Image 1 (cartoon, rainbow, N blue to C red):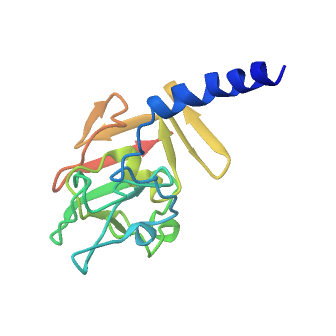
Image 2: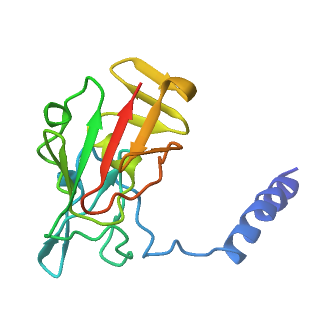
Amino acid sequence: MIVFLVLLVLGFVIPGVINYEPADAAAVEPRLCSSDADCYLFCDDVPEPTLCSENLCARNSCDEAVYYGYNPVPVTFTLQLENLTLKDRSDPRDLFVKFEDEKVQLFSSKLLLYQILEKAGIIYDAECLAFEGKKFCGEELKMELNGNNSTLYRNYAPKEGDLIKIFY
């Protein structure tokens, strides 16, 4: 019986030892965040701002590629939402998006409309817009881009001087 137990234990331990692969030292755990200020990285003793999107830092180590690079010269456009002021909804600790009444300043050219609205606490998924417990979908939600009716451009990256109107 003891020999059987020893063989059973060895049967589970030896394959694990033979196939052991150490964890990749470069793999870094994702970091939770509530604003861009929570995601700062210090690379070579230089602070690098990192985007916080969907409550996760877009970059978690200095070795990762920079997709949402911080640009000190902002892209400015107008964003109008019916019955909603964005300035009061923004977090001053967000670095990549700044709201000033209807003017929006983006400090990264790759940010998409849904990410910009997320910074104001507005969820823009598929064909729905949700905030403060209200949800507007499909036919009740309309969007204009530079005066033209558009399908809901959730993944649109605003350009300098754009005028985006969302109404319901």
